[in-house]
Length: 446
Image (cartoon, rainbow, N blue to C red; front, side, top):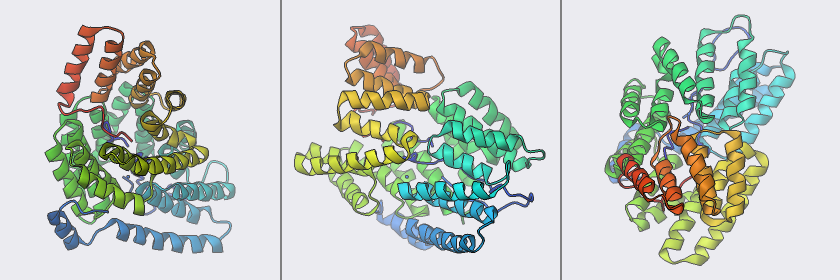
């Protein structure tokens, strides 16, 4: 896992790591905010005790969302010609989908948005929610289409305009347009720091300045209200991922324990705790967490991670069963939301599939969002397919941009080594170690 301060969940995968500040309405009156993060087992007794004191948990948050969604759905059913109710419904469904990362939740968002736009007159409708949804599933051109509609409005609200600028900057990051993204995020942060500082932090995390990223995340956390456990947990999670990417596993674990104390048993926090255990060779602890996640959350990335651990433990039969289950699930997601799933399915095939299929997915992923993450993934696929020259060309393209990660230097080192460039390979290894002295190519990436 390299710099999942992305947007994880992707990662969502799906991890949607953005914020919907408000639902765009017809009359100019602001709707209630819909918070989104840009993915169990309690980490420690201390974290469990702290969580019990606050009462916030992943299950409780989902339950609250479900009650709200149920009420909005009933209102929508009773008002067949009201797109505004469907705008609120879609926003809450998107909040649930970004929390759960379940394909059915994203499909429901899409269906409600389709209904809303079928009712709304041209140029109206839940445009900003639709842009957020399409960005979440990596349909970047579709997201821009909705942002263009917003730009054409005669009197757009200031908050909507700022949100659109931030989202355009996030799209630019996904496309590797880092200078443009930085310019826009800096400009928005100067106007309204709360609107862009988190995204600016994630930009710095991707471009090799973790100190700035950490400072911005810390400031964002300090300004987040105690009654917003989801956002607080997500910010602490990002600090944990940032520390993990620097090789400081002890600090990373503490941040994740703190995240669990804010919002108990969120699978996205738990999977990162499990990853730390795996990196520290605490495989029994990692297996225990992933087994719970596979049985309760049922996401294919957890099946992949657990399969890798079973292989390491010498239990190939258990691993094979999980690999087959995960492969089927990834193919289902590819069929429904291909842009969103291809990058994660690629990681599955790099670990367990054929070089040919991995390269096919890597090329498609790069065509969809050709930023640094996709460039590194494609370089890895080229290497695995026995094409070190192509791998080096792609790594060099990433190195020519502001994007930086330990995995980028690692794949560049491997490509140089395969081509007999000993000095260049050693240089890239040193750069990798400078970013993350504990980097291991055996880390599960999703």
